Image 1 (cartoon, rainbow over the protein chains, first blue to last red):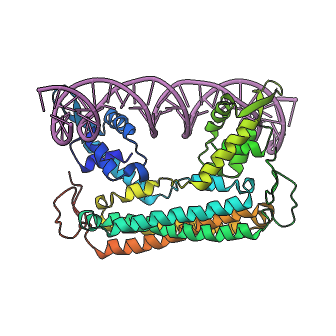
Image 2: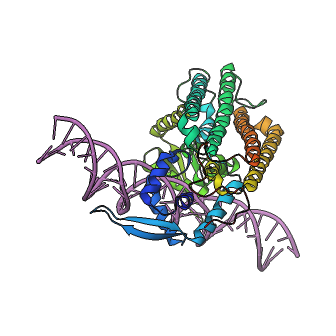
Image 3: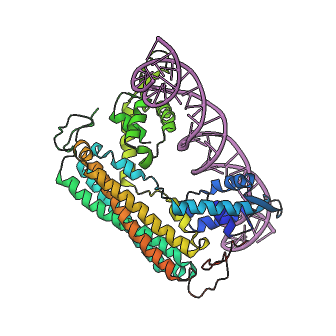
Length: 199
Length: 199
DNA sequence: AGCGTAATAACCAAACTTGACTAAGCGAGG
DNA sequence: CCTCGCTTAGTCAAGTTTGGTTATTACGCT
C-alpha cells in the first residue's frame, strides 16, 4: 500500500488529488495502482485507523469530496512498510518468463523473430526514456532520484536486449531443446520443421 | 492463464497433478500461480469450453478427482495467448521501484545500507542459481531452455547489482535530491541529518 | 498393534483489482 | 446565448487471488 505514502507526502488530500498525482507520474505503469483502487484503499486505510478524514467539502451539487490526513499510527505503519520493501527482496513475476518456458511449443523461426522483436521493443522504450530524461522538465523540475529510477530501468533493459539477441541466435542455430542423452520421447515434439499442430 | 498451457502439456490431468508440477517448478515464484488459484482456473476454463472433463475417479471416500483434457478450442486459445506474451512487451511492476520513489523519506545512511544489502541479496541469489545451473540434474535432465531462462535472470540480476552499488555511493556522497534551482521548500524535508520523525 | 504425522484432493469466504459508469459544473465555439 | 464536450469526484458490480481449512488415507515409529 503505497497510497499511504502518497497521502502522507501530500498531507491533507482528497481522493481525486491522489488519483491525479498518480496519473501524472504514470504510476499506473510501475506501481500497482489503477484509479479504481484508490477510493477502496482510502476507505480501508481509514478503517484501520491509519488515515483520518479531515473534512468533507461540497461544491455545488457535485459529489462531496472527503479530505484525509495521516494519523500517527499511519505514520508508523508507513515507515514499517517502506522498510519492508527496502530491505527485503521480492521479485515481481514476469509473464514473459512464463511464456518462454513453453518455448518448445513455438516454431523455431517464429520464436527467434519474436525475440528479436522484443529486443527492438525494449530498445524503443529505452530511446523514449532517454529522451524524456534529457528533457528540461525532468532535469530541472523533478527530484534527482527519479532519474536514478530511470537508470535502473535502463540497466535492466540493456541486459535484456543483449539476452534476446543471444538467445535468438541460439534458437536459429537449431540446437536441440532436449538435454543430452534424451531423445524426443516426451511431451510435445520439437516443432523445428513444418509439422502441423500436434494434438 | 498459463494453467491452460500446462494442462495441454500433460494432457489428461487432475488438479492436484497440476499443483504438484507447478510446485516442483517452484512456479509460484516466477509465474503467477498460487495453489489456491488452480481449481478456480480449471473450472473457469471448463466453463469457457477450453477444457473438458474426461473422467471423475474416486478412491475410497476421498474427494473425487476430476481429470481434464484440452478441447480443440482450448488448443487454439492457448496458441493465441502464448503469442500475445511472446510478441507483446508487458513489464511486471516492481514493488521496490515504488518504494524507491519514496527515497527522500529514508535517512541517507539507512538508504545506502539498504541498497548495499539488496545488492548482496541479489548476489546470493545469483550464486545459488549458478550452483543449480551447474548441477547434473539441471544439465542433464532439464530442457536446455530452462538454462536460458536462468541466464536472463542472471543478466538482469547483474545489472541491478551494479546499480545498487552505484546509487548507494551517490546517496552517501550527499548530493541533494532536489533539482537544481529549487530549494527545500516542499514535501518532507531531506532527512540527511539526525532529525526526528517529522510530524 | 496402535498412534501420530504427513500426503492427497479439493473447497471457500474474504480481500483486492479492475474498468466502466454517473452526474454535475465549466468553457469555448458557433 | 446555447450546446457540446471535457474535467471533476467518486461509485459499483464483476472478476481474481489468496491462503487457510476440511476430511480421508497411507506411512513410519515404538
